[in-house]
Image 1 (tube, rainbow, N blue to C red):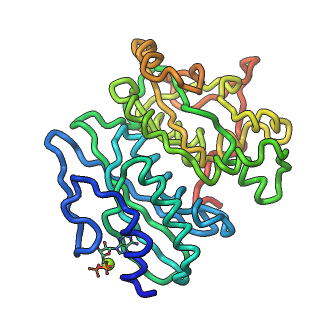
Image 2 (cartoon, rainbow, N blue to C red):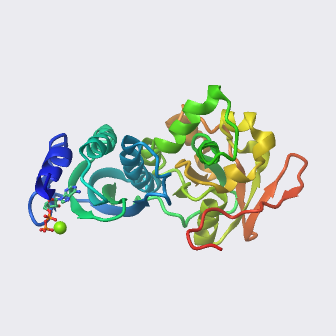
Image 3 (cartoon, protein in one colour):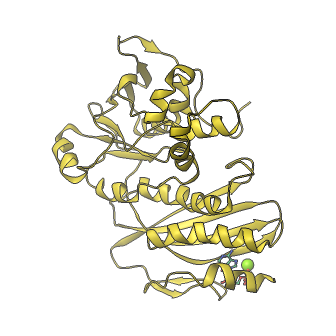
Length: 319
Ligand code: ADP
Ligand code: MG
């Protein structure tokens, strides 16, 4: 199996054919038609075995998640994903691995109508870099800066399941059978909140996706917006499995593990009813806290006491 056959067999065949792809896989570069009045939004993420996913993760999930984490970044910008590139470093051209990997990857790509337009393939330790490109009407991208004192803070969906799943796989946490499949699915097959990101355009004053944990990622909004916040712990939308295991877990895994790929956003009071109308199926329930002028992030328990987390979120170069 040479490089050309590999690309042809696993990445070209089941690919989409968008009308705005003038030249896709196969030439020296891709050529894309960007509609007038739109801005291009680009994000890239590297996904390395043993760092971003346990080495034993099934290849279809690796393919899914490598694209999902990139789509999540575009979701956080309120952009519509359109195209992506794939840089693959592989220890060997294993046909079974490639078939499963490309199936997981291209199935998610198909769901979001994002087309693979090129990439690079080399031999080396297993590592996947995806660059995703999307479109947003000029000036309408959701940014980290823009949160104002008085804005409410929301999270889409649930927190904590991905962190739980990893602790379980590492043998550090028991996980009752009834929750196992759901929790591992959330860890291995996160569903990027692309639709929610689009619906938040014109509503959210700031937005970010939660990849490194709520503390770290909400912290980025606060820093970029030059504000502070108070979060009420009892309002955190903990995953049901997490609530069941709360005595072993405490707050910190949900606050700082990350990998949930939910969106965290801030909403001015005047946009409250518009949010309910636009996102009626919004699982997150009410706000988790409020933006304040005083810098810093304060966590309060149900009695109003300050809670100090022992951790600040995932940092590749910490310690
Ligand atoms: P070049 O030597 O000109 O960089 P390559 O041989 O690396 O060309 O790639 C040939 C074509 O295949 C290019 O269009 C490139 O974008 C595409 N390609 C290479 N690897 C991948 C991949 N992993 N996924 C998708 N397209 C790929
Ligand atoms: Mg090349």
